[in-house]
Length: 86
Image (cartoon, rainbow, N blue to C red; front, side, top):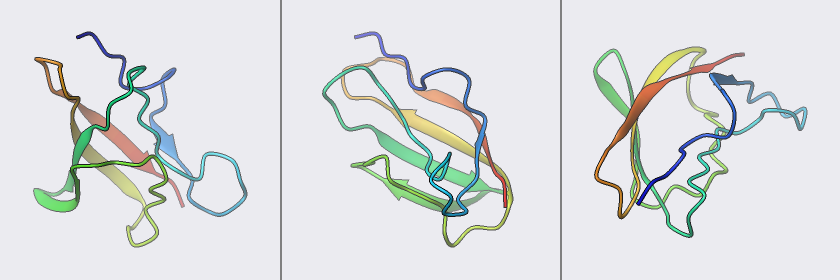
């Protein structure tokens, strides 16, 4: 199965409650729920086996976080970084 993990080139989001770019969204283009691991400085800050696209990083400081996304049916894990902007 092929999957595009993100729509466009989203490299950051601003969870400030203004209704714009408040959540980090993963779009697979498939009716599946991805598994997500997110870390910073080698420490795990989010692990979800059923990511639901409404995560707003309320408890995280501004900064760059590194993700691994596994989509059921895909042979490849998607890896990269996302920036939380406060």
